[in-house]
Amino acid sequence: MLFVDLNLSEPILRAVAAEGYETATPIQAQTIPHTLDGRDVLGCAQTGTGKTAAFALPILHRLAASPKTKAPRCLVLAPTRELAGQIADSFATYGRFMNLRMAVIFGGVNQNPQVNALQRGVDILIATPGRLMDLMNQGHVDLRRIEVFVLDEADRMLDMGFLPDIKRITSHLPDRRQTMLFSATMPNEIRRFADALLNDPAEVHVAPKKMTADRIEQKLYHVERRQKPALLAHLLSNLSIERAIVFTRTKHGADRVARDLRRIGASVEAIHGDKSQNARRRALDGFRSNKIAVLVATDIASRGIDVDGISHVFNYDLARDPESHVHRIGRTARAGASGMAVSFCDPEEKPLLRAIQRLTRTDLPVADDMPTLDKKVRQNVAHPLQRAADAHATEENTPTNRPRRRKPHRKGNSRSKANANTNTSGEANSDKPSKNGKRRNGYPLAGKPKGKRSRQRRRRRAN
Ligand code: AMP
Image 1 (cartoon, rainbow, N blue to C red):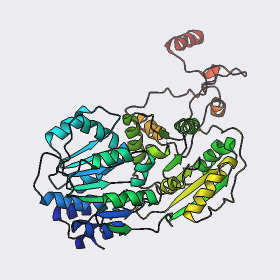
Image 2 (cartoon, helix red, strand yellow):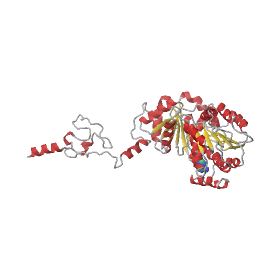
Image 3 (cartoon, rainbow, N blue to C red):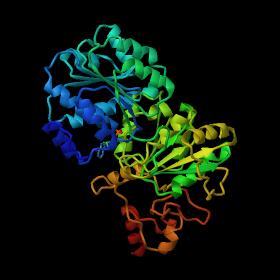
Image 4 (tube, rainbow, N blue to C red):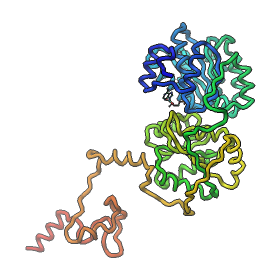
């Protein structure tokens, strides 16, 4: 279905066209007509299906047509600050030709700018439950004007223990409202929760329940735990990777993997709950702008990663619950692209593997190209995924920035000898004299460039 057939207002169609979208994705084509009719929606859709626009576009359409108030008229709840930020970015993109005010509220940062935004007046409020509750308790948020309420990634909200907060927040919402609940999986708990929250909802399923996208090629390596670093290093060097996410189970594990990869020269950052909001945003920005090739993430931190062009997902540790596996691999093959998900399974993780295979009703194909692995990950300075460092080096070597280097003096010794102790870029490995009496900086002792005094000395000798 084309966007122009969806009865959305002109500024929205213009913004969508500016993004290069012509055809609505299945979740959009199914959801938008119901939402424009004012119905509640229960959406079962994986991330990457275009579900943000599925709720954002009709919300923008509706709010533009109803009178403004100082208090927010739309509330979107998201489980993580990254996802909240990305939903806000989407609203800003799709609403760029409209005059609607937006605020995003999440924890881990100073609350004052958020409070100020609320006091100035907001149409669309996007929030994580914890900080929203805080600000509500302090009397900064008035939810009595809410017309549309969206609960995104409801399954993850429940996993993260947000249910009590969400119940308290919804008890402050007006009864007359439109509600949309989106969830990647629909276990009974979510269904019961949805029954209590939604009023005769239109149900929208864009993919069969509990499945993985067909466009994702999966590969499984049975590997000892201690060999995982070497296997990861090998695959990152040998697969043609555009951008990759590596999932670990723990924050500590994420840091360790990032450190190992940095050591072999890959441009990499880790994101997890212990990182500051700024560090997480910087890492995501670097990843999005292609300065960072590999992001190492824990499950919770990865929730809001909405980056197209992720060619590979590595499950360095298998996910603790099988739904998370589906989420993880859904980070690749977004918006019609294809991708590869590589899972490492050590002997202790076999029960997790069985749970994943049961849920997805597929056997992960075992890789037939298991390499022979070195015990130690070898240093590889020119790693194929060394991006930030390369970009930095290029920047530093622009003609104006390049440090001046004296040309090696060719007199006396042959060039090949002079080069014997230099590395491939022609720079010295060390300044110490080598055993054969040549300096390792590329200048044989006898052929070192002469200064003014030595020229004078030679002239005197010649006279
Ligand atoms: P989401 O599932 O909302 O996280 O969206 C996944 C990605 O699909 C985002 O990067 C969007 O920019 C992109 N997207 C959403 N709708 C469309 C569309 N109709 N056509 C092409 N790309 C889209």
